[in-house]
Length: 551
Image (cartoon, rainbow, N blue to C red; front, side, top):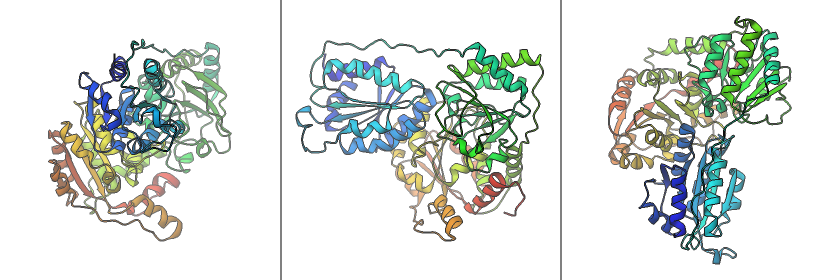
């Protein structure tokens, strides 16, 4: 069997559904082999878009998203999306063509040491030097990409190797089952929680990856311990739940308003340190920490767990709940933690829900967006000022319905990410929530969406500048520098791709346009002017001090 065909057979063996990428000279044999495969190749307009698609596909499905490029500049264009997936623990396998091995030892056209380049931003990077090693390398790449904590892996395919023949075949896919924590440790953790006056649960992205939402909700229903979530764990319990505190992780003020200041025991469930560093919520190292995760805790002076329950997150959390129920004879836990974060958010959204202010208030945009979308629909947030508003204000009742890049936090993820989300879940409404700057970084993927018949809605928060940077410059220096730019006519821009384009011209127009767009069987770009002068209000109201201010 030709090595290129063997490589594709190995991908089929891993149940790969889509490959996102761009054909090139050095991956010609693989592209030809894919013509005889059930794997759907999604031709993108930029390799960064391909990597972001694979990134979001991996986050949503738990299966590695796959992206492919040619050598040199094609591979370097993958880097941002691959790094984003790796830091946010999304399973991804990146593949790049490479020059023939006969010229890798010297200066040669478009040749870069790709394995060395990808090693710092992946869990595993390897070059195929013999066709017979393909099954092992592919199996290892997928196994490590999926293994907790998930991340990115990379395979380098020299063009002359895939032209050779091999008698090998794909390797069996092994199933990994996480273990349960030691019962004595579970009981010790239950004793700590029972003795606590003000326990608090901090839930991170790992709980979403582990599909632990049901077990966490069952625990909270029984023991009435407040839950605060990170950006990437939005919806882990419904926001409508009376123990849902809201989202923390924006600033140091969340120490008080997120309940950490009053908490004595904090149960950290699937907590990834990259999201919300412990020095912000455990600055004095005074909290007793219980670490429930698939991996042992990262070593950090502000994060030294008293007990670590390692293995299956949901099952270990359920065991803790059962042990606590036995100790408390079924009684619920009491807490004196104030729901400041939640209450302030609810009050603020109610204050702005009927606002006619123009340009539109971020609060009103989010209110209308949440109203238009079903609970199971998916919002993909880009990076910028709108991200902090989405993180704070967008209410989620289900996990993985608001995707926020929060580790590497790469701009440009929303549009390609929305395409991947629609491919993964064609029956769900999908909205890319993006600033005008982030939109223009990968707006070319509108053509991909149209061609692949993935009807998505792109909601642009338009302020004609790098708004988040301008805000930070003003706060630090009292003036701004080099943040302004001019946008194209987004309506005409959308129509040039064959998409629908809508410009919002009054505050009461957005909701009906969103509802209409979610029903259309095409891509719709909505250009919505936003007033980011409200950023200071968000900081004051929800981050530093919970006081009423005019705005």
